[in-house]
Length: 233
Ligand SMILES: Nc1ncnc2c1ncn2[C@@H]1O[C@H](COP(=O)(O)OP(=O)(O)O)[C@@H](O)[C@H]1O
Ligand SMILES: [Mg+2]
Image (cartoon, rainbow, N blue to C red; front, top):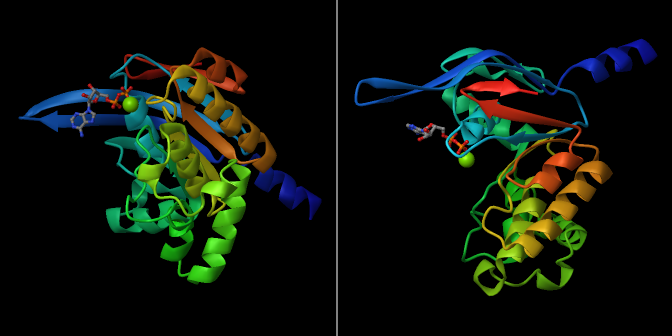
């Protein structure tokens, strides 16, 4: 028994081998990832840095099944995404991956609690139960008193906190954050970083965070830099 759980614990949450990604534009190919290999172990917090246009978002999208690699092996939570067809990717994401984007993508006509509850509602959890759990997650990100507010009635930092609550509510194995504080002023950004950091440690989930922020990157277990389509540790 012990041996089994040990070996299961050693299975990386993310395993990339020689992953390439090319975009084709007007007949020309634009190589963005040129052979990326990466193992992320369970519970690790990884920071990804690199200049604008280096391919950070592309990498995150390939890991999270929002986009497909051109070649190479993409294994996430033990599933080979490179062998899946596009329709299989959506249920995979819903089950295993939480995303926090630079833009929150909250639905403007729904309240904070309803937005947070959305992944559970999509899974078929009843409204009352989903909202109850959503309130717990809003409490966790410090917004218990904003549950009935709509995104337009909240500040940028509060909107991103709701996006974090929404990403975590399905208890995803892997959380991917793409410049989560990119649109916030530095003080609000720092508070969001503190929150992400505390949650990643408290929840014991695996995080891959793209960030320009040195402070946040330096707290991570590892910092990876994308340069010329290659990952450098
Ligand atoms: N859907 C797309 N079609 C064509 N080119 C794209 C597409 N998405 C991104 N790119 C290009 O790929 C490169 C990497 O983009 P991206 O991954 O967004 O970089 P980063 O997140 O590091 O700023 C850029 O040159 C960008 O213009
Ligand atoms: Mg980007």
